[in-house]
Length: 109
Length: 148
Image (spheres, rainbow over the protein chains, first blue to last red):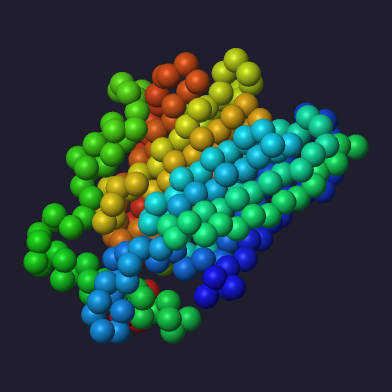
């Protein structure tokens, strides 16, 4: 099942120095909220992506803590101020302590 | 599409059962939402600086687009440290917590959230100097958008 879980990014590849760019992220994950019952009437245990940590050149940019109220395939868009070329890194973690990473380079022209 | 429809029906069925069996106990309330926020922040938030953008009426409570932004210059001197988002009519009040840094450039996040019913969304922003700002917004949720 975890094979289906894929992070997706939309990050600009270039930016001007000091520019604030929009970063869009999505990870395909069912975000099982722990409230739903399966066909046998048993509660499906909670299994959600509970955090996303974003760093740029290994300095923290954004830490998100997600609750079951976040929709399936959690989408998150945020901003980043680019002062220098670097690598934007993402790490998602779920309740089962599985994690997925992604990265994207931004070049300052 | 079929899957989504059944989920909605199942959820609305569950909600109505929960409603009958335990009255309001199963869902978050404005009070439990305040408690959740108070447990994370110190002090009383002032109205202002925070903007919540969401549709007035959401047809599909499974994925409601929400944008929360906070007025701030996001500099080394003054930035938004954290943003707490809650909903007062879901099984749990918490929706998400975002911790920013001056590198964020702009304190704005877009997400998609689940809403079990018509309810109020509340956001509290914590500035780097500890001051708190809040805003809220009601979203009406149409359940049974799949002909049910």
